[in-house]
Image (tube, rainbow, N blue to C red):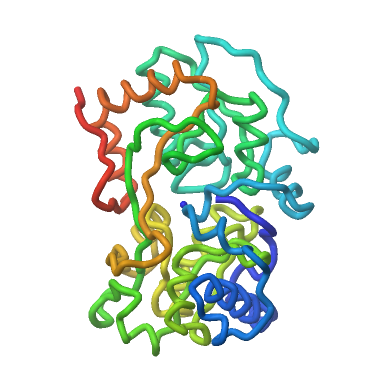
Length: 342
């Protein structure tokens, strides 16, 4: 559900020297979130006008915007070459399926082809009889502009349905944010209205320091839950594998009691944790900010022929898509589900 702003700051509360500053960032971000839900009096100043709208609207890996210097440096570290600027446009070739993806972003994708979006890209390429080629670019701010928008590829495998940044296919799954907790420690939290949250240490992903943050941050702030919340950068340290996994690792290690994470991240990393974890989709309590999102493939706005081809493929190979999602533990909300199959 990304994108971001500055990835390196306050990546993880396990680094003791950063903890105080990180909690301050969480408080500031949650204060700004509360402003959006008419809780200004509870926060007191420090907000930035309109700064939360982007973060509230989509899952944490799928924003777009201007690159900061820190983000550009991380993007360069994630690409096959370290030159500045967007990849050069590639000539169209009907024999090739060009996919833009992040080389270090499981469970979605990585350079070894181990993510579920890698698996989906392989399925699409085989079905269409095309050779699969990747353009690698870290999924931070500017990802769509610098890849699909720059003509460096034909398809991005995961995009919020109806995004105005591209032309999207029919949704092939709908997921939701989920609570992650250790098994055997009482009833699992399933709602932001659960009174247990007032006494638990709660972890959330943070997008950046411009107060645009994930929907759970807004939901927690709306209920005045700030002091017991810890933030983990969605970017983390890009030199390490799978930076977003630090939030789920913190639950397993006992640093926090419960995390609220985008469903595919929660399901995948909970399965691989060092201790048994429970993943519970967030219950629909009528939040002002959505917690569930339809996800599609995306092509350039003018490429309606490829969009229609992909729509037909999703209808035809729907069962295969579902099997791939299930194998990665992707929790699904009611709604989008590919139909058909062979």
